[in-house]
Each structure stands twice: as C-alpha cells, then as structure tokens.
Image 1 (cartoon, rainbow, N blue to C red):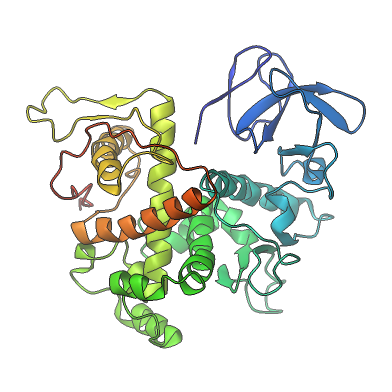
Image 2: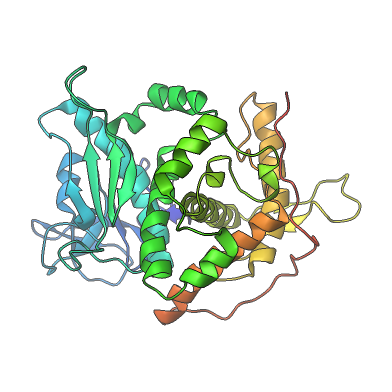
Length: 381
C-alpha cells in the first residue's frame, strides 16, 4: 500500500479516509490513477479532483452508505466502482448493525482490490462471465436456532463472507478455537480470492501441472482431507514445507494460504518503502539482518530479493510489537520450501501484469544476501 496525501493541504491521509482531517476537503480514491484525490463539487453528482488529470468524476453509489470512497469517470455506465461492481449480495440495509459490519468488510475488500488492480489480475463480474466471474456475498447468520451459520468460503468465483467476521470478539474466539496464530478480515479476503485465481490462472490458465509439481495433487478428496485435518491436525514438521498449519490440509488450501501470504508480504513492504524505512541493527556485524526497503515489490525484485527484505523487516516489527506487549505482527516461519511456493505465486501474478503491458524493468537493489529463507519467528512459550 502506498502513502497518500491531500492535494489541497499536503496532509498525509489514509486509504480509507473520506475527508481530510486538516482542511476538510472531501477525498476519493481514483483507481486508474492510484491516488487519493481531494475533490471539489462540479455540479451534482460530479466532482473535480485537484491537481490530477482534470477529468470530472463521481463517487460510487455505495458512498451513500459510507462503505466506499472510490470514484469512477463521470460518464461511466453503471453506478458502482470497479470494486463494488463485484458485489452480488449485500446485507439488509435497514439493519444498522449489518451496515456497520458490511462497512468493516468493505474496508478490507477495497484493500484487496488495490492489489488486484496493481497487478492487473483478470477481473470479470458474473454478468461478464456467468461461470467464473468474481462475485461477493456478504451474509448475516440467521436468527439463533433457525438455521445454519454462514461459512466464509469460495465456490466457482463466488466469495461468501460472513458478517460475523467483522466482529473482533467473535473473530478472536474463532482464532483461538482453531488455534490460529493470525486471523483478520483482510486475510480472509486474500485467502478466498486465492481460490478464485487458482481456478482462473492455474486450472483454466494452463498451469495445472506446474502447480501440482509445487503444491501437490489437488485431485485428492477435498472433503475427506479437511475432515482428516480437523481430526488429526497438521503433521509435526509442517513448518518445513507449509506457511501455516491449515495449508497442510489440501493443495487447494496450501495454494490459497501461500497466495494470501504473498499479498501480505508485498503490500506491507510497499508501505514500508513508502515510509522510507531501512533496517540496520547496530549489533548486526554481518549484514544478515539489514535491509533497505527502497524498491516497489509490486513490480521489482525476484522472490528471493523480496524475502531478503521481508525477513529483517518483520524481525524488527515483531520485536517492536513484543515491546508493546502485543502479538507478533507476522507469527510465521518461511522455510526454503515455502519460499519456493511463494515464488510460484510471484511468477503467476507478475506474469499477468506483464500480459497487461504494465511490466516494468526491474532494478535489483542487492538485497539477496540470505542463502535461504530466514526463520522469521518461532512462537515462544
């Protein structure tokens, strides 16, 4: 994620901001320019972005519910932005609690779309592709005792997100119940979209055999694999080959978990780079824990260079979190086999960007110092 500023007063603003806290200008994200723009009225419903391309724009219709701050060209067909047009089912808007939960989910979904658009990954709606188009269903659980609870998941392009995932207390309960080191709304979106792109880029994209060579045989019974995982747990040595315990359950889940982690790593490194961060611990006499994060991981660097930057960065952030009495920012170990799987995802998404004509010449920064992946953290007792 980039840093953004208000064009009216140069105040740093967040990706989710609707107005500038310093000057009060209304703000909107323009995805084709990748900027948060300060805007001024240009005759209802249009707005003029300041110091941009001068083209009038209007807000996504979901801005009326305060769940979106994205904009589209004034003359566009339809009323929804490039992210919201993929919504198939939204909660009951007459229920304030449901709208509040939906708002939290949309914040994460829009961050997901920031990454999808930066990589120019294929994005078709169900109207454009009735079989594999991407659609989101935001569903509330039925009244207690009257039905089955909603399960977050993916099915042939339809991503279902349970509104309960917006409840931090319930999310923590489930994280603890499932013995997960990390659980977030954004993580859910990145994981489930991984299943969608397995369908689109791997199964339907001619990469199936190459993917099986890395992640294993996906033809094994999925339902039985999950039952086995939940009854027996992960193998004792799972960290040597998998990014998470859940990734051991089935090759589809291994792919989706690895996909999500690739998104975590790249997007976080971009933010660190935007802040001009560098990691240079005084006690590091050999340079193994030193990194300059002065590159754009969305378009530059090999997977080895990205991991070489990530390892020192996340070691420092985990240490800072512990100093605040907080859990590790990134409580995972990236073994060499896992880095190899991340490399497959890296080539997959970079390949789609190259197809779009947005490929950029790489400028290696000399970051590949580690012969193999650093164990980033092991949970202490």
